[in-house]
Image 1 (spheres, rainbow, N blue to C red):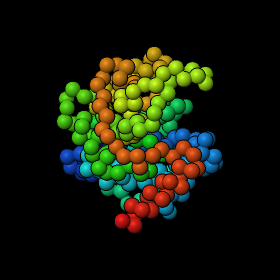
Image 2: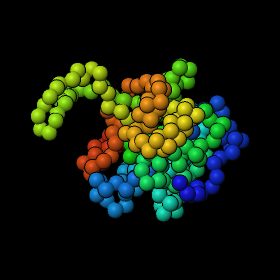
Image 3: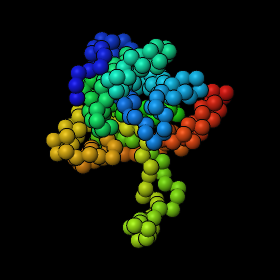
Image 4: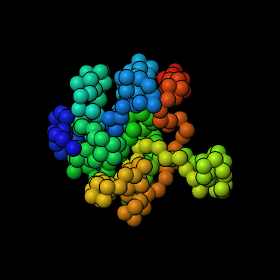
Length: 254
């Protein structure tokens, strides 16, 4: 993974001072190149209502009472940019650590996990490209894991509203019952020890999952869904940014 990109992980005293009673470390994954978005800066740095896009996710996590510390995972050559253009412009209450991104998103999350303080038993993995997440959603996912000892984790998700088709080539072979299908979002909240074990097993077996929940599921961990809103979109294409800007402006104007 390489050495950590900046200061070491916050010590236990700093974590306790930042948020008394908080039990979660948020990992913000901001290491992607955003090739599909088509901006050389990377989509996490494009302007959204006056701030770099990734700023809004960090601010929401900073305001969440459950979150005691934040780890931002970014490309090693973007550390100075994150510090200057993002963190220096925000007034944050929680300690922030930077960790180096890896070759894949899964590698990046593992790097972020290695930077989380052991004193916080839960981790909330969030994509920097989901800037519209709200504190209430973060808290709901954390509360779900906290309330049920049998759960390994909980993810935000929305029910499928479209008719789904199973297709081979261009031929429809089945129309599954959409009531069983949900669209996964982030944050995804897990018990730290469980997610770390799942990542270690995946690395050992050279398995690449589609999200963090899939790594925990394959080890037999029970993960629940917490119903979210469709506003919590992932910015992938330029048209997504226009939608996010309209939604955020509506919120800011009250």
